[in-house]
Image 1: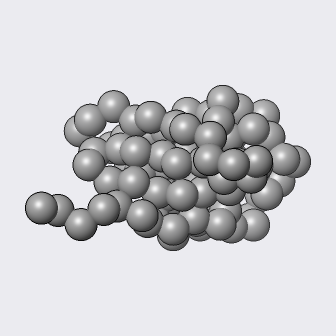
Image 2: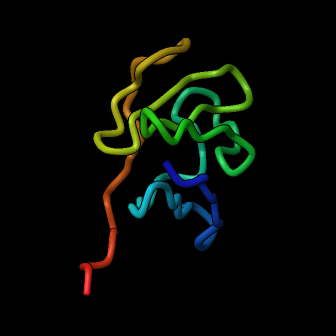
Length: 83
């Protein structure tokens, strides 16, 4: 799978590109507002992990997968149509 890139979009959103897909997510973790721009993206599992307390979220659904929070991350897929 392709490497992931994280790009700041405005003050409160990030664009995450991974494996030919693109997602727009909140720039701050819902737990303690860690900067997800400095987080880690797991390209194989389509997850982003906060660098502050290591909460991990699905890029597809925003669901909290691991870490000290059960609050969702606001995320949506913005992959441009092929062609």
